[in-house]
Amino acid sequence: MAWVSVHQQIRDHRKTRELFRLMEISRAEAIGTLVLIWTWAVDNCAQDGEILSATEDDIAAAAYWSGDPHVLYKALVDTHWIDEINSKMYLHDWYDFNKPFYDNIAKREKDRQRKREIPSTEIPRKFHGNSTESSAEFQASPAPAPAPAPAPAPKELKDPPYIPPKIKFGDHVLLTEEEHQKLEDKHGTDKTQEMIEILDCALGAHFDGKDYKKPYNYTSHYSVMKKSSWVDEEYKKRHPQPPPIRDNLMKFEPWEIEANRRNNDAATK
Image 1 (cartoon, one colour):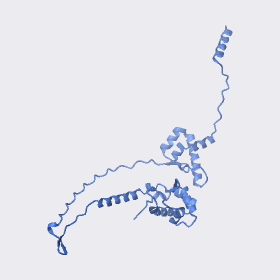
Image 2: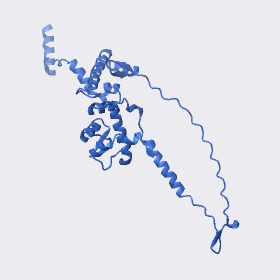
Image 3: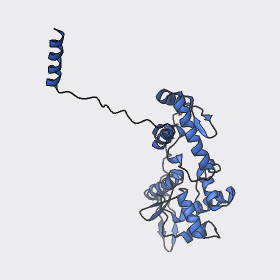
């Protein structure tokens, strides 16, 4: 029996929120739509996530979607549940989320191959006319009992890595104390605070469904403020720099400077 992995983070994942907002359905309907597509994909999807010989109508039928199939498909692509690569459709990170399932299939196939390579033990028979009777002299000796497998060494338990807690700055921005200190060391307290306000406004506008720059191209809010150029652009718009002052001083040639020096020396004598 085949199965797929459904992680708990799907309940409140940002991509799930974007999907039910785009499709104008409830959160539960959006999650059910994804699970239906994934269970259908077990028989209609390659190990790397490529959807094989299917159309938008097939995907809509798999999800029991009664509306326009293109609306469903476009919403799945826009929220990155489905990726379009070289005119092919792929379920996003399909193998990464279902690696235990494919590992189990590979293990079962390996066990079947091993069993096929073991020769079967045949017990010879002694014929007496039309009957076959077992002969004690031809009975195969019982196979020796296999040696007990050595007990596996106990695994060393390691402490889970420490993940520092994130603090809320503004309404939406989350940073650790170390990340906040790095930003202040680089930009100063005032500029860091204003950059946080810029990112907080962007996140708020995105959650409200407005057409604004999406800061989700990075893995964390700290990465947005550290690497994203549009945060600096917004800051420079708030603090325009005056044009540089042009140096209008007259330039003298070396021979002119020497001539002026001699004239000044002569005048002082």
